[in-house]
Length: 343
Image 1 (tube, rainbow, N blue to C red):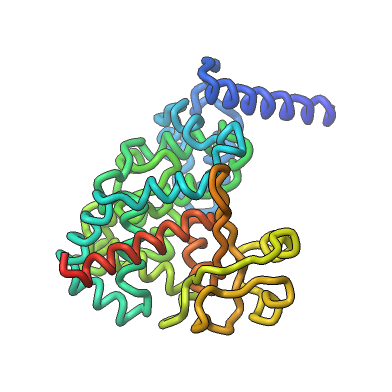
Image 2: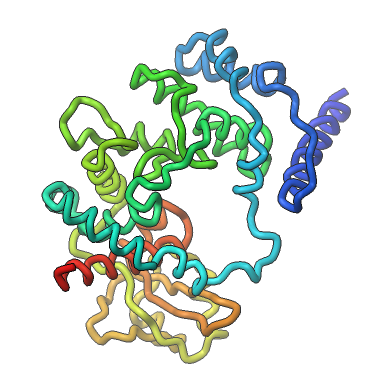
């Protein structure tokens, strides 16, 4: 009996995964059973209601309103070919004249709030501006997916990350309770991220701040709240006030340095470790503090190497990608230089 039950769940998970794969390649997949009728959704509603003192009937009725969104599955699937990963192409998506000009204007308009956040949290204004620019081009691209349906789709129809998105789906219900908003009213990215800084529901509940003093957190409409919340997030994840972020590095022997790259992006090596394996910072003023060796690979260009310090690592807590963190750093630098030139 137990074996039959296990085989049933394996078969369902495989069918969902194959369906998602078909979507990525243009094939149609059958529409899943409505969420309100599925046993795993009912179990989720029961557990959430019991744990958080919510009304189970209302939770399940709300989940029954969620709709399966094929576009969400298609958007979250990794590229079919590893060769698609290219730092040169990734960087070009975020460092263009439109985004730099918009970031300069955003900084000019919100200079006082950015200065206040930098003083309070220790996070430089340009990094705050860079993150909001990479995330939504200063609110222009916040996403138009119903958050309930996006998270339900990922929680129950995308097995590789179901655990994460079930947690976020539960956090969405709690966020709605905190703010007295209908669960169905939220709209954002395909992955359930919300507002100018694209916070997941759990991040809103833990790190977002009312920075304009109106008594509520409004990340979709208040630039002040977005600025304060980004600074709060980075500060609580270990941002070092005045600390370095990253510096270019020279690698004499990529094969010897591979062990440093494979160790990950947490800063765990010192200057002597790098020197022993033929790695050196491009600038003599580089700090002798723990760092990671970051490789930025492009199929059609030479690999860029950087030393990433604690603050670089903190940016990857926002999005766990070295490409993402470096794009934020580069955009922040470009906007700061544009501002210093008086643009």
